[in-house]
Length: 147
Image 1 (cartoon, rainbow, N blue to C red):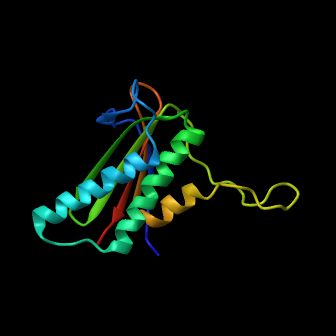
Image 2 (cartoon, one colour; image 1 turned 45 degrees about the vertical axis):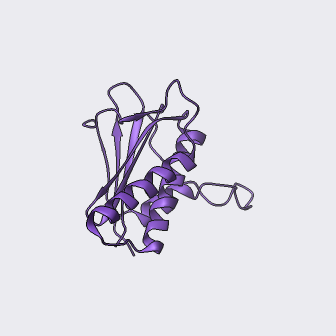
């Protein structure tokens, strides 16, 4: 099982890749950024990434982006960086609300649709941080090992 640490702070600057005024950011945009960052790092170091681990980073990118769209008022920015043996994915949105884990069953005991993204992010990432943004909203950063 992968360890994760969740913090909430106010020390994060706005995300470098802004989405305001452009077509809405989609999960595929952030996944493409993850692939490009990993490919660039592979080219620079000559060391390939584990494909299964990279697929974990792609899933985390999708979940963070989808959650920002569904629950955060839309994606306002994102950033992807490869740091040694990990991919760092940050997604910003308009909401100040913290992510929550939903009960998989409703009041009648039926399975709910959705509600699994945040637990997936927390399970696959070794570090997860939620930061308030000075301009309002939040940024969620997840560090996913890729070696």
